[in-house]
Length: 268
Image (cartoon, rainbow, N blue to C red):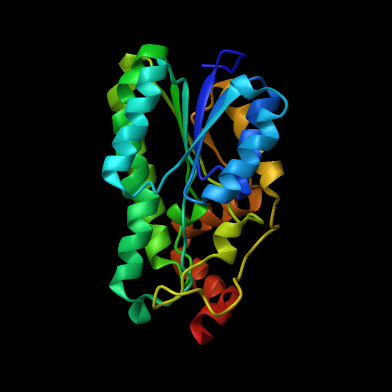
């Protein structure tokens, strides 16, 4: 489906980073927004900024998406309003820590936020999306396509997200529901600034990256353009996409280059 002034869009993780950029672009393109985030203060502030222009087009809900009952209440509230056209599963967390040193609770937390929550929210919203002929947009990562040192849990969660929604795509294709998988690489957003360390506290070392670090605004424009074209997948960064091909065609070479580029992770 393509967007118009009647499009009702739910965005998770909407109070900062890519989620906030997606909200601003969607608002500019006429969408009615339902914004969700666990940061109550930031969410209220960002929602008020948009509502100052048109209060009828913005509602918001403070929510921890890993809270199942709270998530169910959100779906009930949306159903009571009667419509949902686009669900954007954007909220996420990451970690920077070697797998062998990482407390399993960190992996559990990353999987809960990055895989379990978007899957459960989507399943709850499927009847609404079926009624509207809507679309699910998932913010995945190129880390789900290729290994990245120090991100074992994050890579696993994003790979699981991609596989689940590719299967779901085929299962709901005859029901009029579209799925857009978005695979960014490195973005200048709070997800990396707030990365977990091996013990669940803040990561102690700076992140490593390859290619150009893009802005959230750059990414948001491309996501909405892909949605309006009806794309199924978006690989916005050519350099990282080529790196993912290298991983598939020459995995040993990829590993050698990755260990060199991400040496900071091995020393952490």
